[in-house]
Amino acid sequence: MSKKNQTVTRREFMQRSIVASASVGSSLAAGIAVASPPKDADFLTIDPWTKTQRQNFPNPDYGIPSSYEKLVTRLKYANGSRTPLQKLHGIITPSGLHFERHHGGIPEINPDLHRLVIHGLVDEPMIFTMDDIVRLPAVSQIHFLECSGNTFAELKKRTWATVQETHGLLSCCEWTGVRLSTLLDRCGVKPDARWVLAEGADSAVMTRSIPIDKAMNDVIVAYSQNGEMLRPEQGYPLRLFIPGFEGNMSVKWLRRLKLGTEPWQTREETSAYTDLGADGKALQFTFVMGVKSVITSPSAVMKLSKPGFYEISGIAWTGSGKIRRVEVSVDGGKSWEDAILEGPIMDRCLTRFRLPWQWNGDSATILSRATDSTGDVQPTLESVIKARSSNSYYHNNAIQPWLVASNGEVSNAR
Ligand SMILES: Nc1nc2c(c(=O)[nH]1)N[C@H]1C(S)=C(S)[C@@H](COP(=O)(O)O)O[C@H]1N2
Ligand SMILES: [Mo]
Image (tube, rainbow, N blue to C red; front, side, top):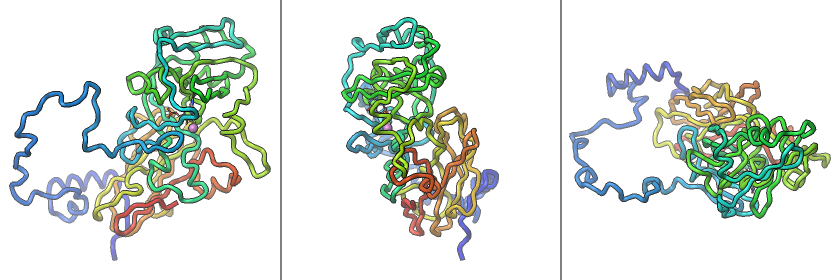
């Protein structure tokens, strides 16, 4: 009988690694080994690329990934594209791989001509140019952005194969800009202002109402992503970024903010982005994204080449604060073990988790379950479905299972 599939504690892992490096070939080392020892002196052979001097700059002025990384791309669908989460490391999404969701295409905006208007219940309405905005005190914050439609298809049935397909409407970047409160303070918020309307300059004229408390708290009017100006598809030259809230509220190509006493009941907060109940009544304004996690490796449709050591690794996030804990199960949810959370653990940001695993070659269902700083625990799919009517599909934050078959093939086990 084969040994039970088991996770390896950090201490055990360190001890085994020490043993492994001290005595290659011992049984413990064999269990943990992921590389092969040199058979002869062939590792001393000099490779052709070491023998030939090449030009310093075969690459364009704006750097691109190695030609061997051509398969690490976004995956397009009708209204946008998805991030290849299973092929990324750490927590940062490279700008060129950030997911996209466009309701009316990507406008081409000349930043010199772009304006942001703030009006309504303010002491003094104002028009800002990009120069005006970039001059103001700025902040840089690393936050995730998730479309509330992310993972929606899995509510009904197993639909997608890879993490990119099931969870790829999620990305995480460093966003730089001016706090919305800085701009609103300049205009002077009238005491009866309760809501802010944000409007985009794209042909969809995407509009959403934001509660004033959130607007005055951590919202960023962002012009930069990962150090450079926003990509056109992310809202160049200016977007709203609302940490922790459903993606569609972070209005791209931001051109107008209006302060008022009530929400505006715009198209995107009435006909869409509401959760229709069984009684025909819709739940409106579910702003905060629930606590969620997914194992990105191993994940569908990877193939484990042989039994032995693997690191189970994934990402966790919550719209309510910080990730406090991620548990991993390798037996379909019967038992759980705490994964290692990689710091710094930031507010409304992806957190990378890791857990050493000895795969014995038997089929195994692997799962992750996140808990956030408010105590919220990621729900099972069954409980999400039970809590919903079949009409509702936004905000699915259920636990995602992957099946590692005995031949090493990994598949979606929803
Ligand atoms: N002006 C405008 N803002 C928009 C959208 C849009 O179509 N137009 N799409 C929204 C939706 S549904 C999401 S999930 C996020 C996606 O942002 P991204 O394309 O930068 O990933 O932008 C939101 N902001
Ligand atoms: Mo979205």
